[in-house]
Image 1: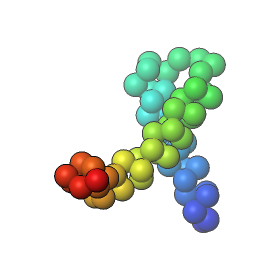
Image 2 (image 1 turned 90 degrees about the vertical axis):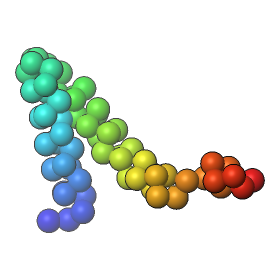
Image 3 (image 1 turned 60 degrees about the vertical axis):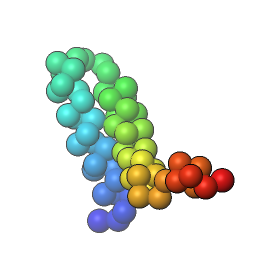
Length: 61
């Protein structure tokens, strides 16, 4: 399995969770897939920011 395949699987799983949480509505699969993709693409950025805060927040400019 490639990295891209792994990422698609994660997005699909998260989209399914979102769909279930929303009450399993019909004809909104693309909305949940796109939301899941956004969430998973933002997660690494947030993790990086948490471990390496900008210099300004550390009292340095």
